[in-house]
Image (tube, rainbow, N blue to C red):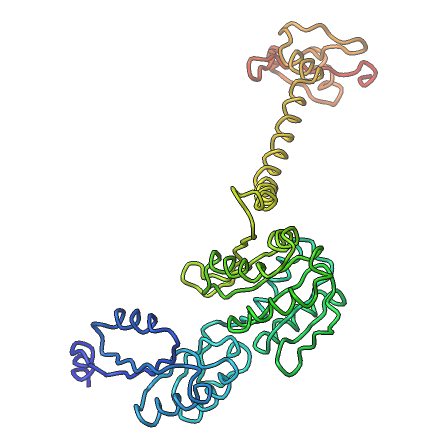
Length: 376
């Protein structure tokens, strides 16, 4: 048995793993192939969001290619169905869909855990930084959980509007203040056009916050936004709207799936729009580092003042008194004669009486005094 265990450790075992990869981007396949070049992993890639929203391709990966693992994401609307199918087939599903962070089966591993709630908390923090009093959240179905959580955080100051072909109504009463776009990349341009050209009365005094999952470059986003705004006739209105746009982008930090916000504000040159955030960061650093240093300096200064007080000098002069100090008024020195008298009064008859000698402590003469009225 020991020999079998030793051989199982020493002799390498090669197992071929076939992974079904759902992707819309051919570059993802090229990167993964480079990563697994010297391994026994075999990738079978089919397009996502094609052939009945990817469900047919998922079925082909399972029945035709007999894959051992599903990786990637079909369309967000069908990710829950794929999760249930993977559970029925008994194969793991590594899902990159944001919907899988909420409702998923035991065989589904969400690559973005708690994505919706984390996104809501991050957006609330951002809105508090820009001092948003009223927020209109325009969201698609996949961001429904995040929009609901954000509405619960901000109470009555938030209004939710679902952007879909069946439910979106141009007669919605969009509140001024901040319009937040939680819209999928496929429908973002459509949502921006609907709001900009249908609700012009609220555009001047309104800030726009657009969330992006980090796949779109900020420069490309603002270039596309410029093209949309070119349809406006008023050049002043165009510049005002562009300056009020904030792009909130999520990014990974230290190879962990954490949501962080990278603020990119339109129409900024030489960091003029980021001055406020720079001052805020400097204030936070001063509060963390500077305040404890100031408090410590004040304590040290108070201690130095205590050491320099006049009573400290008088106390030290007493310690440096002369060895031959004069008795204080009302006190007399207790000599050896008075000591022997006291001993005789108590019934003792000492045969040897040592001579009185002063005691010294740290080069200081110690002389005992006793009040005159304390001895009969």
